[in-house]
Image (tube, helix red, strand yellow):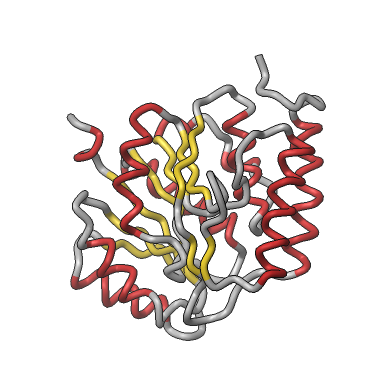
Length: 245
């Protein structure tokens, strides 16, 4: 079976994304490739979970995983990954629920995944492709990317990005229970666990547009976690700044 017609799942963690969710679902279901959507909601007080349930009743491609409390990005994605593996999906996406990631990029990810174990959507591949971010947020992101490259040796231009496509076998190679980080450093840790195994990782350029509705989840705690996790990953790789042989 051609990979473009295989089962593809997009995982979207949500917390107070009620305003963005209907548009996201509509755009995903209009793609020229067939995808399912798993909404992982952390008991959003704005009713996102209830809205997700109503959308799933209208669209059989939409699934909802409810969690009892807000436990962070990493825990939400790991729960979604476990669900995806149990259901047998072949290509499993991470995607933000605030419309900052363009669903129209998904076919390009699937094409790249023909020859890769992990596809990273990059805001900084061959230039900067970020819209509506204030300069201080952009500089924080760029400095974080350089910091991760310097400490870990990973060569990727955007190691903190959250738009990704994993092959099923790639996720199966990771002990999800051992994933330590929970904020945006989760993206660094997942990529590093795959990279240090010597698996194939490619970047595809994307345009990132900052959210129009809702508020960012970025916080000083998330930044501190990323600083700590990056060094932990280096030690896990025995101070190597290259994949294990």
